[in-house]
Length: 149
Image (tube, rainbow, N blue to C red):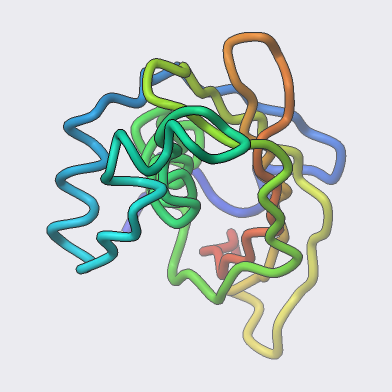
């Protein structure tokens, strides 16, 4: 099968940027409904107003999911991925509030062959940034790729 891209097309140091999405109240409500995470900091306006943040914050795992989705719809990976192997070193660096707009910067950090020459494993560093260019989340996303043989 001929693919549009292969793992060989990505090199350590390559950097890609996605489009953006503005986090809305609807995102928080939908996420809470899907995950059953109704923690008051995310869902209760009055509770959140009395915290150090002064307003509701987006769920951290929601930001992770949006980051993965933004990279997917950006399309720079094409159909090169075989499987997701995990995420490491995930850190929430700054809160994301309703109305914040996030973008993802991806850097290829590592490439390794596997025992099968038609497969390779790569680690991509995802850095999620808000509309002010501040990093709000970062993690290492590990994928298995189709390789040219």
